[in-house]
Structure formats: C-alpha cells, structure tokens
Length: 203
Image (tube, rainbow, N blue to C red):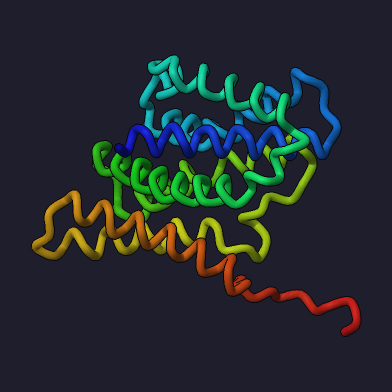
C-alpha cells in the first residue's frame, strides 16, 4: 500500500512540476526536467547525504517511467488539468506524509540523531519543490509563510514521541503520517500560516 501511495505522490509531484514549467513557458525538455526534479529531488539529496548510492530512483526504473508518463499526461491534458487540482493536492499531501517518514526511517537505519532524522524526512518531502522553485526563479514555498515543511517537522516529532510508547511500529508510522497530512490540510483549509517579521507595505 505504501508503495502505491509513493507512486501516487510521485505522480502528483511530477504533474505539479509540469504545471509550474508551463507557467514559466519552458520548452519540452525544460518541462520534463522540472517534472523529474520535483518528483525525486528531495529523495536524491537525502540519499546522497547519507551515502546511499545509487540513489533510490536509479535502483527502481519504475519511478522514471511514472514521471515520464505523468509529464506526458499533463502536457496532453493541460487544458483540463485544473479539474484535478483538488485530487493532486490530496495526493501531494499524502506524499509528503509518506516521504517524511521514509526519510526518517532512512536516518534511523543510518544511526543518525533524531533531529537529523527529522531533517532528512523534511528534506525528502519538500526539497524537490525547493529545487523546482529555484530552477524556475521563484522563492521556494517552504521559505515563505505556508505550512509545508512545518507539517513534516510536526510529523517527525510525533514519530519520535510515539516510539517511546508501547505501540507497534506500524501504528507509530501511520499516526505520524496522519499528523503530517492533517496539519497540511488544516493549514490550507483555515489559511493558517507562520508569522512574518516584515511590516506590510502600508505600515
């Protein structure tokens, strides 16, 4: 099941990259590159930092096929893609919940400190978007007010708190993932954002 959600998240991230590339009026090659880095950029950076090479998408060619198919789908049906935005947002949110925990587990397997593990989880979930935005000359979403990386951090903290309790690992994994997903959904629904230190223009 987690592999299926992982694939769905990859699809969502790839299509979101295509949409951004379209807004920047990139050519076909640029669109494919942006789709690819959005989908696997965070996991690639994580694997390189912990020395887990070849990186995951190189060991499983399915990810490459999924990204290419998703990009082609988004290009062909770009005029109708707006109808899928709600579903894509949901898949993206499920994806960051899963990828956060995947990154944490990779850190634990590498015997890293819990804080570093949480950082790896957050990186896995969100740095594909960071690389995408940098390549598209935008300020990355996680560096602005939107609750994105913060949701990943909350899920990571929840994970390490729960493993101290007499709970099965599967339950800990699921609950921590739900914390990430619910935090992100509630933040968007109720327009919750981190405070800014800058004064508004009218001030």
